[in-house]
Image 1 (tube, rainbow, N blue to C red):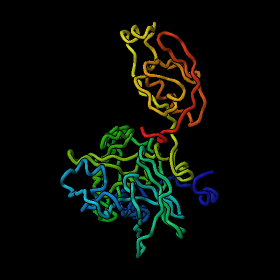
Image 2 (cartoon, rainbow, N blue to C red; image 1 turned 135 degrees about the vertical axis):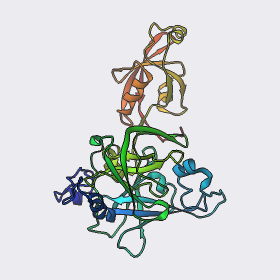
Image 3 (cartoon, rainbow, N blue to C red; image 1 turned 90 degrees about the horizontal axis):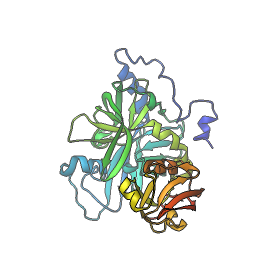
Image 4 (spheres, rainbow, N blue to C red; image 1 turned 90 degrees about the vertical axis):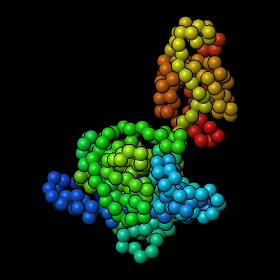
Length: 359
């Protein structure tokens, strides 16, 4: 079922399709940035959240990105109380679907959206979210003909191209900053959590910008603003639309992203380890630990096993095994070739779903 059938059936571009440049906007001519902002900013919203556990005196202290990067400059206390948070988002459908970051709405007991031209905050419902990708989709009811932004093609973005960030830093709504794409495919770690394949920009991104759009000079969204490194000026990050598009329908229709999971910790082999395990090869993935209750444990895989094949695909390195499992589906039945104490074994496995067991 396609996302947002009302839009798809109309024959117009849907929220997840790249569009042509905004009519009348000349990316090179003077005033083009102002024209883009005029046309796109009505679709950018402020998001306010209320959380009944955990607390802070500052609405941005509940944002894990900015707690790490801004540290003690954001007053924070851990006493139990109702806390509020602020962030940004943008409308992707005329009937009220909104994209933002998962960390903006994580744990919220109440979500409200502030829109241009609306006198009062509008209650929003969390439709779907994924903490690993830091994406969330909200829905506001009773709205039609809303201004929207369309997701462009982040893969075609080149380093050095202009980028426009719109959001609500420090609660200052519809603040616009401009910079360039500084790098692509950046990994970062925030509070021991890894994020991959991010766009890096020097467009200023501050607390409250999280969840807002990063635009190209055609007025298309190329990323969702996510984090800032306050220790170095001019370093901000955004989730590219190439990450968003493949999962957007799933988030809306299922509320979550199901990920395959084997339930093992693995490492590579060297000659010394291979000799100890009575193997004549160093190819494969050595199982160093098995998660209790996981699919590998249920199938009988144990610590010290070496996996050399799964689902009829060879495994030469731990990365091979990880990549193959990532392409599988939960509940998929596969056969693994395993070496244990030098002996070859065939083990039947049922791929699990990540998150079903404490990992």
